[in-house]
Image (cartoon, rainbow, N blue to C red):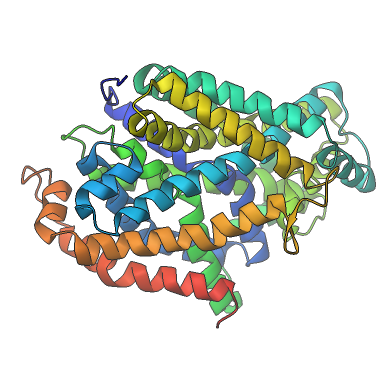
Length: 452
């Protein structure tokens, strides 16, 4: 049984849905701690430069493949490649998105637990208490699994309602709410005593701190933050109309994504500096450091601290959910189109399979710590393989595919909407995707393995 392929219903829906696929924990969780570890403002300047050099060209390339193929990511690459081995790049994108959905749901579930913990007041205490709270919860055999399944079921509900009735409708509600919460928490954070030190950390660059590591970390963050090579962008582009301006959409999505990252920094660093917490707390910043920061920063106004903490984890959950929806859709589109079943059937396969992956990944962090691949827990192994191997490889081969294999005229036709647009930046885009982007991605890939 097959279903007619849907399209997004409006330009706003296109931007919000695609931005929602990019905006996620990479912005609200990973970007702040990466900025903190790499010098703040100088890292951010480099990050914006990398979005221009790498992010936008890669995004446009996936837009071209997705819209031209008008099908799931695997089939879209197969259509453009004519059945050559290049089609496996599309399959890699689907596999990457599928595996990320499984373990990403675990972290997304943690966000829901912290909403609950904020509501009932379980996050009040000193630094050692908050640290132990996260350790006890994340290693629990049941609680993380409950929240993992809960957020997967919510995602499933959105996906089965289709492109317009599910994904687009949810994006139009969730993305504005996300921005409102971001701005509110950022304002509260900036009003804490000594907050201007955190603002200066974000906006006053010290370029003497820039090293090759900082530059390559900024490159990697731009790749991660924009959801390049996860299959999300290509899949969503398959729902674009022929009138959608691909370059404009890529720029708009990148601006929204970058704005969210900056607001996330304004939420976190002013409050952190106000209580003397180092900005380089790393991945533990969100779940261990921040609860204590909020407790201290608003010690004289505990009710305000409670509200800020609650809203922060609410927006963190929204960011996780918007990405999870897009990741889920990558695999759902693949299964229901390739197996010729209903959308609901495809979504059910993904939800059930990713729930199993999520359960085992969660258990590997505590109750069943023998679940390992080599020296990595199952959770860390999924994170390593997808983030450090599959994503760079997928992005690298996508650039080679568009720049060196697909006929230039096809690329130009899609870029200019078949000659109806001027295509002023086509030459710059094509040069970037043919030469600059592959080299930058290769640099990221080799750097993370300490080759240089």
